[in-house]
Image 1 (cartoon, rainbow, N blue to C red):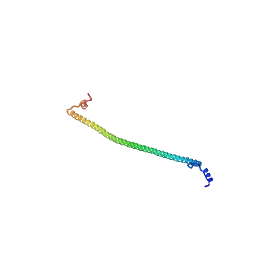
Image 2: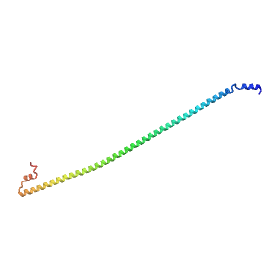
Image 3: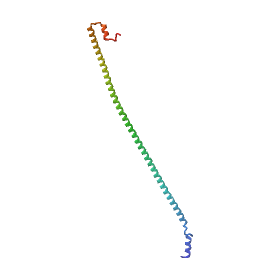
Image 4: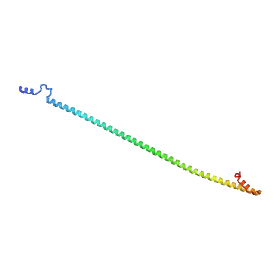
Length: 163
């Protein structure tokens, strides 16, 4: 505790003990800047991560929407093709049914036509037979009465021809 040493220590020490040494001030400022920068970098990094996360979620959501729309489109196409196949089958069945009916109708019509033709032939044969019977009866009648003129006989057999 000599007075000289007190003076030396007074010179070395700053006048205001609350005020730090200038080097300490600079160091503190540098540390403060570093801390602020570090904090800012962390915030930026978190912000980037958050943006990336949101972007990934949007991308995933868009991909999901695309997949959904593809699935809906596929289902719609499948339903459309199933409807078309069903409709085609219905058309084929109706056509087959109509073809069968037409075949049956044409068969029946052919049978009817054959029967009608046969009936006409039978009626014609019957008519000829009846005419022959009439002619024989007439001939027998005229022979019986004694008339033998061939022209008179012919007129009796075919009454419409001579007139």
